[in-house]
Length: 391
Image 1 (spheres, rainbow, N blue to C red):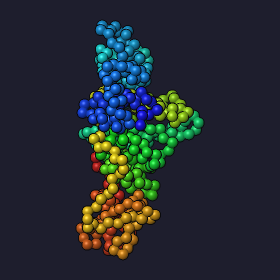
Image 2 (tube, rainbow, N blue to C red):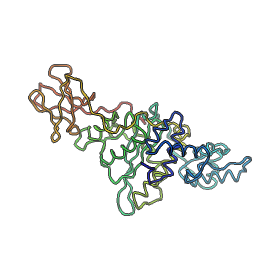
Image 3 (cartoon, rainbow, N blue to C red):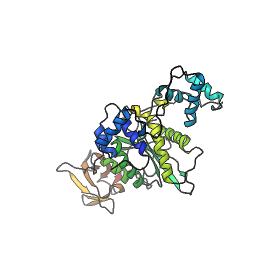
Image 4 (tube, rainbow, N blue to C red):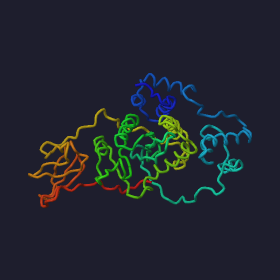
């Protein structure tokens, strides 16, 4: 498959910069981007040779020794003009990485203040909240829908966002027409093919991650479980536990949607592709020492399989296939209810602590419990809320 038609330059740029990361598997990246190794190495060679035809704009400002104060001030104002939401520290860090000799952040702040670009009241002083993060890329992704925006034609656009907990790298940013599980799964397939599989994904308790009936398991969760990806739910009414995703939404709103209107989903997606490239590879991130997220990110070593693995059980286990129409299994001459999401799936029944107590398992995960001493149907076993509550 060739480069995608949307934002071709961004596709090439992202491929090259991921391939330049230490320890990257370049041939695997070529496969995930749908290009041949020859094409991939061609763009790498052009990048290393300084061929700016790869990009839609220059990635590095020109520098000159002995730059005068007015020239430096012009550089600061140019970066601020291109990125109105950036403060003095981000601008200074970006210029420093680009090879521009810059003064202290306080000097950059004063330049912005003189030109009326700083809020005189300043940012909030509340910095006391403790931060948590996973120790490595792809240990945990945070996923959510940002609040919808209205296009000029009246349609609602629902931005789907995914942020890596360790690096703040955004592997997925999609303009969606709805918030259905099928839509989410389709975009996750594309993302998994590109970046590999994470160990877990952290979500809230709303649709499409949770079922409207109150059951924790959904078809989307079962599909992820087959791929070896845990779906972890945040505590109800605690959006701060998904702080990285919430912060990403605020930045997205300020940088993409502020004072802008879009008429088509294609226009929103084009803006998303360009901004995600900037966010991942150039924008200094205060929470990780003003480094861009890509400096801390590596694609997962677990590739997306062509087909979800079939769940296998040991010989001699009690195995049942859940009906495809009704979520029941037969055991000991009775019908027992299991979560709706497992219709059509094979499950195992394993004895627990007593002769009358059994667990219903999907692979190694217990999804329900059977008590032969009661006349009530099987009780569903919900996923336990994670105790780590990442921020």
